[in-house]
Image 1 (cartoon, rainbow, N blue to C red):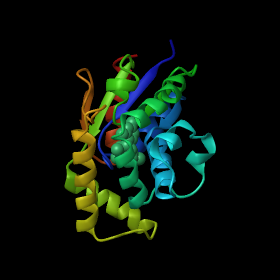
Image 2 (image 1 turned 90 degrees about the horizontal axis):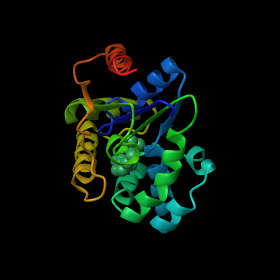
Image 3 (image 1 turned 180 degrees about the vertical axis):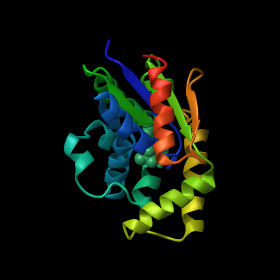
Image 4 (image 1 turned 60 degrees about the horizontal axis):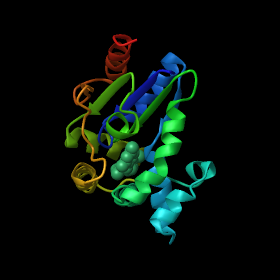
Length: 201
Ligand code: C5P
């Protein structure tokens, strides 16, 4: 079996950065599963039905257009609460995890639902305030910024929806290693993730 690393956690905790660095370090493929939900969310904003959008999702939907806007993020977290949307995306994610050479998948339910047999599970988190500050800086750098308070409210609203949904809610797997990045530099957070993975290889 190829080696699978599951990285879950709330928005802007550092999952994406850590996942990319870990994948590069081990030479593994990386799938940001949030992009799947964002692509479905964007199609819904364009008038599509959520379940149909999920069932007909294509690779190019993950590349085209801007999937990183706050509007698309909110739409993504809404469609992500629909069980048939989640079900439509399971096979693609599991097939990706089985790629020979190893894979890193990051999202909300990778360690709990998509890859419960993952070799290493990390749960990357940080305080809502720290995450909102990071997201604000990221948006500002791309000229997409609202004010900080709006970004914080947005982060908290998405957290509540992701943790509160009945199907595959955001939570750490029982055997996940917790990494709180609130007070960690990017380099330290990446080093902590690699150390946790090395301990299980
Ligand atoms: O990670 P990202 O912020 O791009 O994810 C966008 C939204 O997609 C999340 O707020 C969440 O509702 C949903 N999502 C999910 N399960 C995943 C990945 C993302 O429900 N595995």
